[in-house]
Image (cartoon, rainbow, N blue to C red; front, side):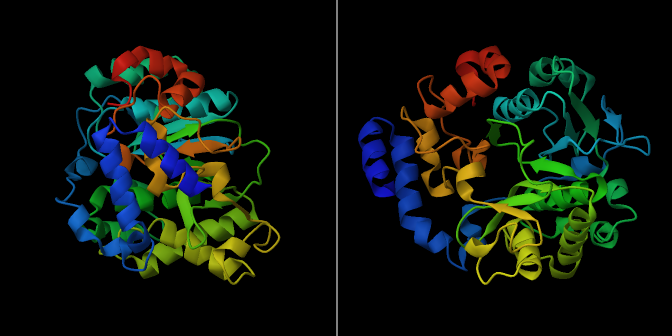
Length: 349
């Protein structure tokens, strides 16, 4: 079926050179990037990330996370770690879609850098303030790690000694946040399609037959959730690698679940083999695999069946135009209409 879709979308994309080029790259590099050598493709990253904003303590309009912060168990957490101090339309769409699908949940948006008064009162942040279950907070990285197993690693500046500083900080924070508060973590390049209410309290989802993904995770505050949360921080502390892109994100939850589950392969992992920890198939959270991410930017019906969320792989597709007739545009119109219509033709840029 996949090859038939490739033939179909290729025929529809003849006039879109950027998407055709991406499809070609994914096809050629696909087998290689699924190999053990994939994380060391340094030539795909040209510069080091600037994360100096993590250590700024002024000109910030956001309420800081402090001892009074106590999110409910039904919380969804997002992290903005880029230092730009605002949200683009794709990120805002992810947040709105989560808030709409979970009107009785708390949606927390954590910024690792300052957000100015001007940005807090304008753009997508101002638009999202209309949703009563969304709140924006400032996260001071060193203070956030204080008293946790990652404190020494953060204070020693491990994240300043990696090519992927923003990405690896995001890896640290997703596990740290779930360790501290429990709840659900989501990447900012998703579109949430339906409520997570009927899922297991603790869960993750496979990205492939080899890897558990880290873009959507749920650790509750029950004994199993605490066990897994503590294991992820312990794994990060003991096995952190600054020279391998995926080692500290999906690598962590994959290694932890191999130890927890009575399974020989990732595909065998499930609640029944993992002591009640749910491991869902990619069709529920990653219904379009990264190598076919360009599907979202074509006028086509996606080959999916009622997922909980769609992952649009911004690291790969950030430069793709979201035309009004594309699959992504239709998802945005349905699941984040406030943001979609606020941006109009500029959505996705």
